[in-house]
Image (cartoon, rainbow, N blue to C red):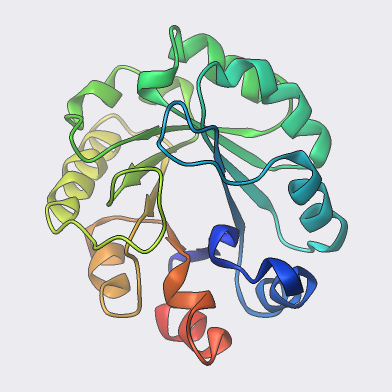
Amino acid sequence: MPLIAPSMLSADFLHLEKDVETVNSCADIFHLDIMDGVLVPNISYGFPVVEAIASKASKPMDAHLMIIHPEKYVERFAKTGAAMLSAHLEAMEDPSAVMGLIRSCGMKAGIAFNPDMPVEKVFRYLDCCDFVLVMSVFAGFGGQKFIESTYERIRTLKSEIDRRGLDVRIEVDGGVSPANSSALAAAGADILVAGSAVFKSDDPVAVVKAMK
């Protein structure tokens, strides 16, 4: 059964505590999309919002950094209590060193990459990360349409992880919903990130249960 990680980017920021409690009650992980307007063409939220979520969160927080120079902020995210931290491959000069820094701060380290980047580019870093975040839309905006080639990308990645006997989880983010969650899990995804499908629905709890 995959873990479900609602993306707080789609939460109701006027009633954030209510949506935090929803995730606490039915999901597994808080997914936090951090955008700087430089690496991606959008700005999301920063530490005040992350700390507010952390103050009420009873499930682990997973910070997805869509920012340049992610290494500058690793220690600060660790202080918020984040359990997982991912950075984009194209944003790191030395991905192995950044993964080592994340781990040294007590967090699970992840590498994220966009749909136009060959999966094979991540293979050389599988030994130094704990999870890989496969983007099934282009990073930067919520509510995008799921890219169908993601299934094959996940299968390719899963095959390489299994071939090498590594303990690396696969997370998928973008256009995930009850309509494709079963197929994503079958392809090899361990963690499903869903924003709009959860928080824009009339019954977020039912959506999470359907995905599980």
